[in-house]
Image (cartoon, rainbow, N blue to C red; front, side, top):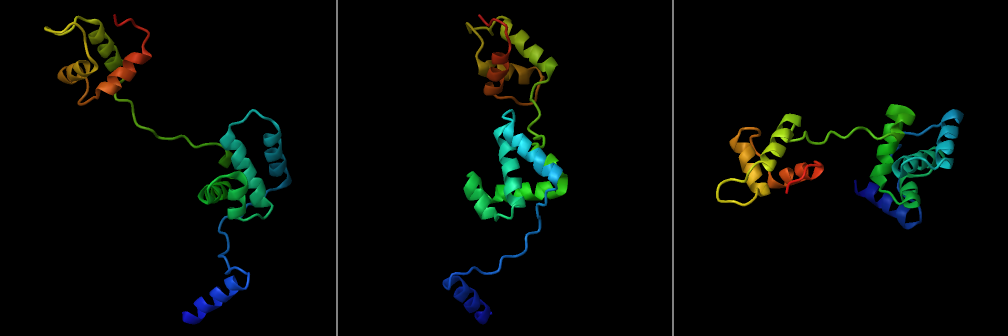
Length: 165
């Protein structure tokens, strides 16, 4: 163990670097794939992320290290590794983003309709107008939803074109 550490230290000290483990995901592009990537870079109608992915693949196929690619394209090394892996597993489909799951909306169409109806109705007794918190509490009271925040109510009402005044 100590001998191995000394060997690595000497190699680094003398200007070399310790042997890197072999890359698990090697990018090999055929002529058609390379041409498709270069065409994508020449036509400027793609997202920045897609163009960066194409550049990563081209540089990786040219034998550059992840560190060199990351520095040249101002991305993280982990990004380069992920794109390599994705290309090996999915081919050029790796250029396209996978759908992101996101959170399900709290209010469906029926609940939104009910919210708008409540917002357009007369304010509760003792109030001159509805507040976002009052509307949120009202939806819970009516068992339209189990819980809801006043911010969700505000964002939902903001998206409608109805007049609240």
